[in-house]
Amino acid sequence: MSTTTLREFLSTDKKNLSKVRNVDLEQQKKLAEFVRKTRKEKGLSTPDVERNSGNTITDGYVSQIENLYIKNVSPEKLTALAKGLGIAEEEIFSIVRGKEPNPEAMVEERFKLISLKFRDATGDKRRDAESLVRALERALQDS
Image (cartoon, rainbow, N blue to C red):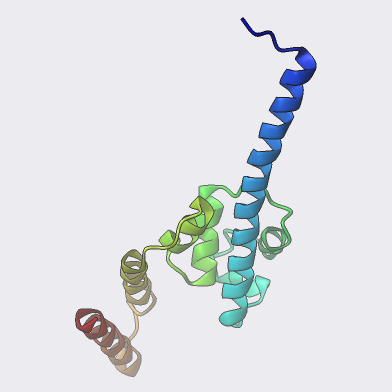
């Protein structure tokens, strides 16, 4: 029977902990990069993200995510962040899980977002939104 000293056990445990922390840090970095990139591509400031989320996530919290100060973002905050960035929830949850987003799920979610955004629209805005949805549906069928 093999015996392990306390020192050996603790050093092994520390090695394992550092591996876990590195994985978490990598996912944290991916989320931070994704949020910053998406925000910049859409021309959004952190206050814009806060406003778009219905004030369910603060601009300071978004900044803290981007600057790696927040280690564990709750599902509620991820949902708020997705709404604030104008992206599908599936997209941001995939990033956090370390997986590639499912394009079909994102398209479905975007259809929902477009429908909600233009639900009360009238006239030209409503016709434009409906045309956009039809064009997207055709593009999906052709691919």
